Length: 167
Image 1 (cartoon, rainbow, N blue to C red):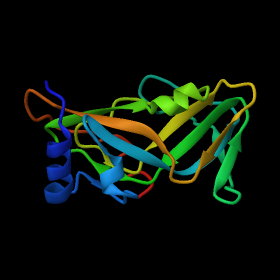
Image 2: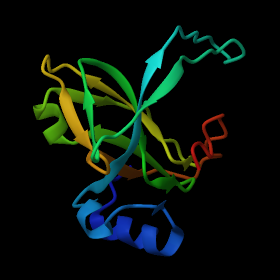
Image 3: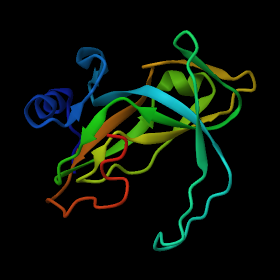
Image 4: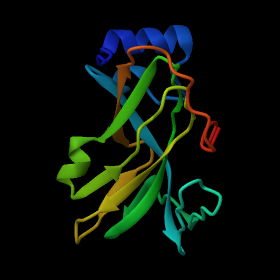
């Protein structure tokens, strides 16, 4: 397994549509990944239920928090963030998302899962604000960096319920 370079990510964007709906390709392309940006944010409420085979899965409700003058203020707590970019991962790649270091230095973190081979969608990530004074985020702020890895061989690809989400 190896990590894709900026040049290879650009090639896959231009030739295969790896990522679309980005804000500014030159700014978002990084030496070892691609920065994803904040589209909208929500606060969760209510219980959740997670089981083995998802037949009894219940996810909490999400209430969107409106941007004011292009900014949103987040108190200490957990939020669901929606990204602008649509990602189409081929069946020979996978991705991991990591928080941008400025977000961490501001007292917040991003929670993500594996972005499986075959995933397509406009993903959601969790944001946890630890800073007692809160954090302001601007619409289109770069919040996570996707790092792409080649797989040893093609796989059958992701077929779960989040395939095609938010598109």
